[in-house]
Amino acid sequence: MSEIIAGRNPVREALRAGRPINKIVIAKGANTGPMGEIAKLAREASIPIQTLERSRLDKLAATTTHQGVIAYAAAKEYVEVEDILKLARSKGEDPFIVMLDEINDPHNLGAILRTVDAAGAHGVIIPQRRSVALTATVAKASAGAVEYVPVARVTNLDQTLRMLKEEGLWVVGADMEGSEVFWQANLTGPLLLVIGGEGKGLGRLIRERCDLLVRLPMAGRVGSLNASVAAALLIYEVVRQRG
Image 1: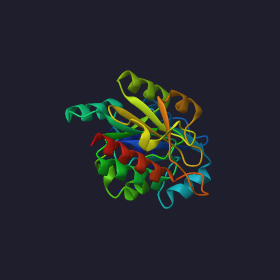
Image 2: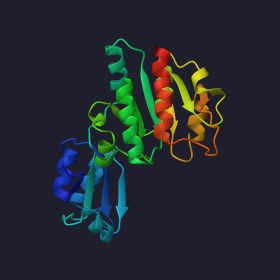
Image 3: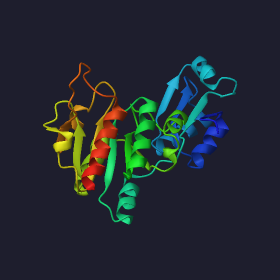
Image 4: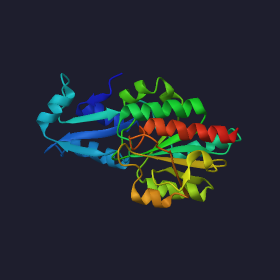
């Protein structure tokens, strides 16, 4: 199935049907009539809207007639954060959730989803903006794990993090300046593991919200690990400690 939905009626009906959409792209100046309804439906569903020159849409849509609007469909439907908590409770397990702070490489996200599935973590949280979504490339990189790992896409990571703290989760962030080496930290119990984006790590506010920052020791000349590799090491340390 194509990742791109092009044209006013197809996009409008996809929105009306509640199909999971990552982003809507509208041509500049095309914001009246049916396009106004599309924009309204997108805003009601908290779907990001981007405005581009019509010539850019021509390239994005390739041979498809776009009529000034394109929708990028998600490879899988997103869930709510509460659904991930319910899944853990239904299994009688302490929640183990991975939050990703602005991961932009689809191959990294796919690899993380694959690890989350293999390790038996309960789900992943990603931000709605400044982050890769569940695209076809992510699905391919996950080697099928996207079908089994619940992914929540939220508008505000900080608000979500605080809500999970209130639910009793201990928040551990991966940071080069972390106070403890990751295998020495206590990673048992209800846990939210936060992994930062490529090249920049955790955002300042998210870093400050963490209950504990852990580091991966780096003995070589490279300053950091690939985000998906770092995530895999931390996720499996949680598995080891849970025994």
